Each structure stands twice: as C-alpha cells, then as structure tokens.
Length: 153
Image (cartoon, rainbow, N blue to C red; front, side):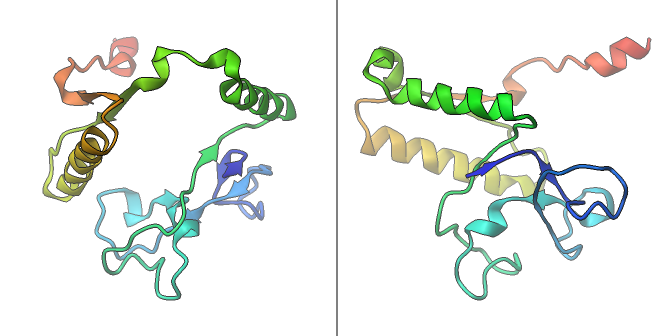
C-alpha cells in the first residue's frame, strides 16, 4: 500500500514542488488513446517476475497494490484510525456482507477486457462467497450529467 498522493515528477524536475510518492509512467508503445500514449499506474509495483512490467503480454499481479492518496499527516492519521475502527468489533454488522462492483461498459474495442474482468470478478464472488450480496453497477446505466459543460454556459 502506498500512503501518499502520486506524482510522476517526484524529483521535481518540472518545478511542481510536490513531495508525493512516485508512480510508474508507462512507455508510449501501448496504443492507448491518451495524450502521447502515456498513462500512470501503480500496477507496475505488483509485478514481481523479471519480465513483468513492460506490458507487452498479458500479465497478472503477484501482489495487490493500492494507494491512499493522502497529502497531509492529518489525512494519513485519519485513514489509519478509520482502518482500526473497521477492524474492531464495534463496526460489525450486515453491511459487511454487501459488495458493490462498479464498471463502465465497453464503448471501444480496447475496453472489452475491463468488462470481461469485471464479470469474472462478479462470478467468482457470487460462487465462492455465497454469504455476500453482490450488486453490479454499470456507469452507462445512468444519465451523463456534464457539470463542467453546464458551468461554462
């Protein structure tokens, strides 16, 4: 787990004056439709095999990777207290049997992997953990409310 917001300029070469935890910036060869074909991901740190991390072939994470994007010490302390409370007996209740999975549907061909992974996770939870109430939410099931566009009008 990374405790700290991400920055691809962790050496402050661009002058942003950020002291954030580094994030991996991809190579530009992936053909992903982002500016300059780059994107940032913490997944790189969960690939432990010597050939992993190049995103050339399909790879699986060997360890879970997550980030809590706190900026201040107070935010970090608040997060730690929240985890401690979650692990305590005082927080037990039926809500712990509820799982909500949220995903976008595939608008483009390259997005189909996300939907397939989402469905596989849902099936696995549903069959392996019969005590869980699994709910799936697809973002396109809701009307898009473009707040930024509306503010400019």
